[in-house]
Image (tube, rainbow, N blue to C red; front, side, top):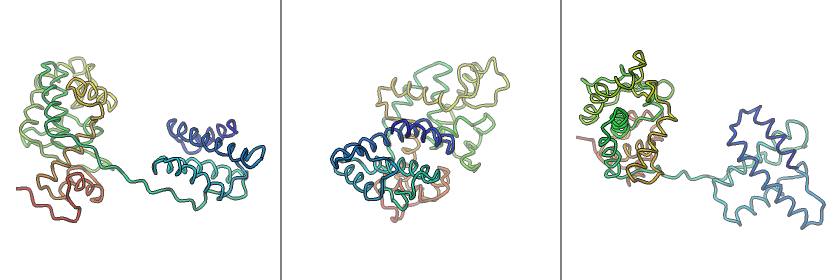
Length: 300
């Protein structure tokens, strides 16, 4: 049975271009299901229960088994997706007369509230980078200032070019998802850190790459990648003595929460964050301890 599952998953990976992580998770979930079938076969005095003989009633017993063992809704939802992928494949190949997962719903997964950090923790990150009087330190300080002052995504930060920064107007031009453009205001401290980076640090970092257009660059003078930024961020968090759970996106969430607390209207915040729908932005009213329906005072 294990060999059959591996064969199906190999074909699914090619057909649906599933990631290796998804395939690995599906494999573990399906092996757990086959273990359940073996236990049921022993209880019922059967040599085995083939995958092809599973019906809706059998699946119902499996999900009851999962609930009794305290699996979370998210875990059950993933296991449901794995079984659905398996049986849809077997049904398409004519190996089962009916798909037992047809019409099978997934448990509602309650999305956790975004994680944020306190203002003093943000200051610890900024203080750590500001104290590093090196080209990389000035770059890191400017990057953190930008993220905490604008709430932009890391993917947006690393795609910025030097020409996207207007220090005189204190604004940054960002191209977000679906090529939506927005111009984000930056405060005086961020302007100052960017100015110092552009004048004192970036020329050194790009000394061998004078034609590089990227705003933030690595030690070789090339555009910093998302993966490169994550490594930099991990080092900053560790150096500042903060929990490793603090990620770049936590800064975005913290910016949104603080904006709500300062009275920024939801529609204005939606535009700043680059959300396509205000429904996505409304979750920050819960993070800030407000009702989405409650009026938010205009920021002075």
